[in-house]
Length: 331
Ligand code: TXA
Ligand code: MG
Image (cartoon, rainbow, N blue to C red; front, side, top):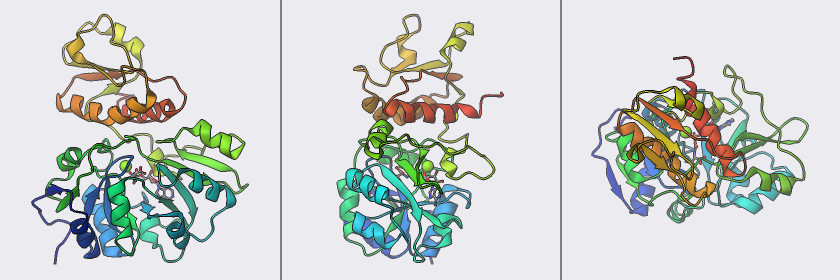
């Protein structure tokens, strides 16, 4: 019997049927999505789902997103699907939208951490679509990184975090979006709530809905969407977001800057990374996690990250930077 502690010779490849076979036998496989890479398991196999928590070292109170191939499939795993949810699904699926809806009894409490709501999405990456269409069960897939660390946006990133812990990484290249999906749920008054800003422009969602998305109250003890835990998505290096603090530094050795589109004029160029020279928030989102990982590997003394204008994907990017800096706030 293969347990989650087994040591594997982790392989990277493009063999979709191999990934499908592994999932069918209850083994975990890393898969590409348009947002970030996921660590996938058969959502209907409890033992396989439990391996995800062990492999990622993820607390069991943090539930998993169910991934299916289409809206029709998603209807099977939910108990009700409000009209607004249908409208958003029809607009954005396949794509980086996760909906939080009442779960069907077919989805176990292990997947939802005991909640009667299930988070569900239809990813658009062509390889994962083909994979999902070739199996007769939905998959759960949290980001394929050790819990708390930066999400992976290419197969190499997955290997760095999970080498030896899974047998196979399905290589679908670099993720097109680069940030996790946007999570939307509904409050008891029937209004849509933004649980996690992500790969979609929330202004556009608000235009479709005809009203402003509600914000959930952040509560670290009973998080509605634990991705909203304050410290998350964090590199090992101390990360700061306030550019003003830069003026206090008289030592620049080991200090790196992440800038949106322009280099800081009075700082060594080799210690700066630009997210998008053309000033595109979409391109900045694609590069953010790679840049955080690249700089982290240099073991910097500090990283200073410039925030983006708070519109469109800039909101989700700023959210991730804010969470990445939280743990250093008081040190
Ligand atoms: O883009 C994505 O969503 C990626 C790719 C792989 O699909 N997945 C991802 O999964 O980001 P993960 O596990 O890293 O983040 C899922 C977030 C967590 O914050 C989790 O707490 C929340 O979704 N979530 C999942 N199920 C939930 C539920 N039933 N109720 C509330 N929050 C839920
Ligand atoms: Mg994650």
